[in-house]
Image 1 (spheres, rainbow, N blue to C red):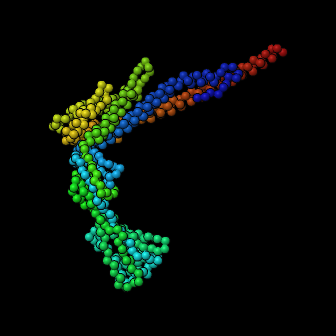
Image 2 (cartoon, one colour; image 1 turned 120 degrees about the vertical axis):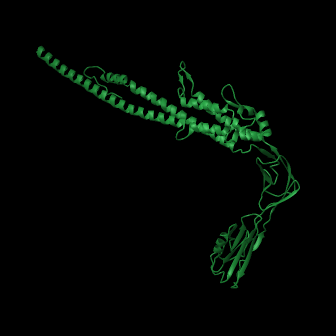
Image 3 (tube, rainbow, N blue to C red; image 1 turned 60 degrees about the vertical axis):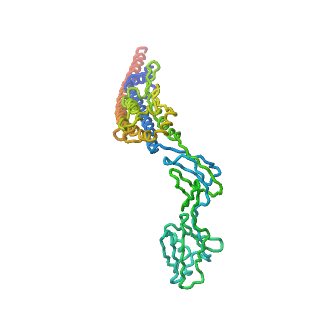
Length: 438
């Protein structure tokens, strides 16, 4: 609050006196502001913690999606091979010699050319076109149709596409199958005997893909070959050359996803630790000091990490047994050799440990839900409580402001009265002096 300068008669800086009085009376308001600042910082940090816990949940869910915990990698000459390779957990390690003799291609056809694409006098009564595709025949009555309308009718056939092509001097239809290797056949009937007919001509015949894998001939209507379990070939070209594809187990790929979880967990614990620092001498007090709800997050997660999941009824039922341990700082770390060996030697047990309903990930997700549930999670409840406290304190600030405004008005009135009285006394003194001196 700013007080205008006064004390012209008394020579006393009454504005400074009023301001000093208001400053002294503002102590409770300042204390309330400090509490609001403290609560708002706690809300901010709890919100950040919730985001980090969300990252941890995402990492755990990604591990669940690995499935059977078998991963493979494909090694081949990606620069020159006429195909690409993808693998999944059903792959079989080994070397596969691949030759791509032919790719599957879609049938394409064209018609005779026409002077206009909007002429509805081309076809007469009884003119028709039968289109057979995928075992289904569709009859199109051509009478009164323009070339554009014929294209629209063909487009209504599932699996067949058509468009009018303008070559600059005339128009014709382009007809194509949507699926490689699937043939289209036509029957054109012109009962009215028009001078101009569609005259559909094949420009590219449908053909199947032809691939040899380890000497075995494989044909396919598509360029995606799934003949070998766990290995998908996508044909991009043809070549008379033979290309070797080496499929090998890839435990590193699984470890990378587990490492994402480890990193996310360590980020949570580090964030809690940093904001729980208390040092009175250095005047350090983290936002989580005294926040029991947050400290229970850290202890709860550690409980799951160190648990044995005996309900799995297997040898490897704890993180520490598969090469994932808490170090002296409370952080998780991975022994890569131990973990990767077990991924290769005991994939079923590793998979069950992580993904079973009685396993680690479900246990961790259930624990996280206690803290992060958007309705009744402990962090949400705590945040709501802090926000309510802030609202109450802001109401107290408003009441303090009104109290201080009343105090200021009263002091200004009192000092103004003093100045007025001094003015009157000064006038009387001057009058008396004048009379006495006369």
